[in-house]
Image (cartoon, rainbow, N blue to C red; front, top):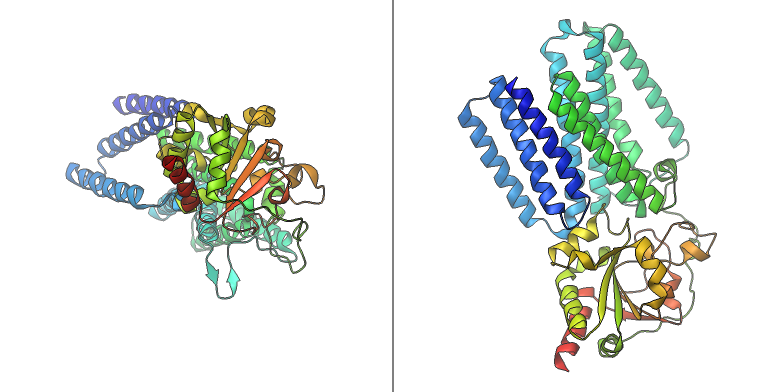
Length: 464
């Protein structure tokens, strides 16, 4: 009875934490509340079941806490998406191992319900584990010999092969569930595990470019569903609740991000966005002459502006420019300028990447605005300062029906009175599409490393 009461308290803390996570102002508190709920649930389970002695539990908490603290302190902001991908993979691997161990512990005690839940745990867990490893490799832009893992990878008959594997896995799963004991059943079980791992690889390989934040969110949902299935396997109510919450919230976030890109989930999973092509990409040719601007002239424009909108992107994270951008924002506000930070839902390489980045620099939450709130008033903005963002401000999404991103909602920075783009070169962004914004009459290109460029502008402010 006592353990059930603890589980109810933990479930309430999870729900409260999710609610707090819905706002940047309360997200940090929500994370702590959810983490405390999980610590409470795990500790109570270990004590109640008598799985480990107290001293071993304490050692586990200390060692795990130290590893987590060191990892959180040392990981670079640019590597956060990779870290999240690995966390998703660990969750999937844990569910797979729970299902596997429950099967090998006593195959003769298997019931139809237990065999089905074990199959779901190892299937979803296997897909999540290997899929997350591939996502991590793509975000790291690793190479396998001459092949780059990062871009989407397609081959003829890919969906047919995936369908065959899926059918084979279903057939093996049904045979296992009907007769879960014996050597033959064991073979079917390992066939399911093997195919799930292979499907994890093949289902993520066709995804690349700007679709990576969506697949990270989807894999997070998978890890929750796998944990939910593992909860049914070991009859643990809090694991079922926690897995359901993670699975449901991940699916909702995935749908929100697909809507922000004006695409269906099926299109994200199977279109091969960002795949390497041997022919010239649409919109990849010269589209005009870019107009460079120096930090000195950038200062003069910003000093005269009464409203500035900063649009951050992955390039800002790479340059670690969030703190100097915050310093520039403070100087602008001290000069009587209104400063906002507009964040596109899929900016960066994971959901909420830019929010975390700006929070690290203590940018006030009240200054953050979403795409739907800034676009109606963007024509009144004196200067849009685009730092490291590319695809989410590309007007081809609105103007060019032949573009791969046509129809995707963007932040309409090109409608502002003046646009300053901080970028190293005119190279394409993560989606591999040229951006005509760079050549518009009201756009000036501040070439160079984002941190160094903004720092130079800050120095101009301080020197006058």
